[in-house]
Image 1: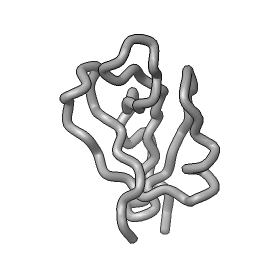
Image 2: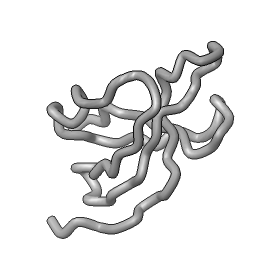
Image 3: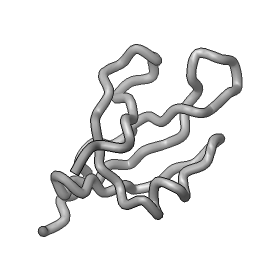
Length: 76
């Protein structure tokens, strides 16, 4: 599976990105703005807490940031 979601690990826009493969329905449920979700990377089985984040434009909120990395592993 190819990664289809790339949240960053830090508050800065140029922070390291984590390639994740998400279910297409989950990917479509993510909207711009303030949000918080537990997302499972289908390729590794790891679960991350991810929130909406600003990009380089003020108040745009089209980016995503990992707040808790690998909060649990889902058995494959």
